[in-house]
Image (cartoon, rainbow, N blue to C red; front, side):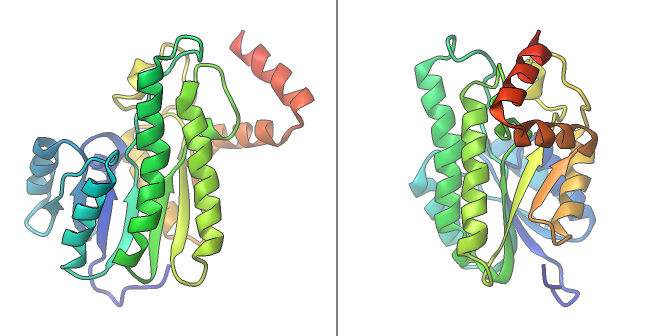
Length: 249
């Protein structure tokens, strides 16, 4: 990503009220960035923005609503171009497909996948030339895993969307993909299975910032875990699927 001539970066973080997003906001603020923080929870956002200092702004939105995103984008457009947009907002509900609630599954699709599509359409004009748009997939999107439910399918879709955008916006916008492994957040604490290579939100935030400052398209971590899943997803199905069944047992 091009340098910003020593001026503070202006960054919009969507999904900033807790977890990775809040840790990312704290770390970027510590490094001198000016932040616009968005999520559904106005109280949490306001408290976070105030704790970071006067240069940061809370801008609540509902990622499930296109009109809400457009209204937020109009407010941001009035204050000048952004250097980066990082979209992290997501819903998660682990369990088997057979046990999934259809209404909850539809909501997860709307927030995780359709919400990312709305950001992909609405957000680019807010960025300066060469600015950065990062969408958050997940290692859960690499290959279908038991208990991933509809969440894994939506994250596979976000990965595909980011790949498409990378080509479509080449030369204008620096599109990136973030694929975390297990991070100790409210969402992962609902899991009832073993989560290898768990990291803290603070560790995740530093890994994301470091990765976004390199030239790599995908930021994935922790690599001792993600490379194993990448290898599994690269195998032919006749080899990969038996390994997945063995892993689950």
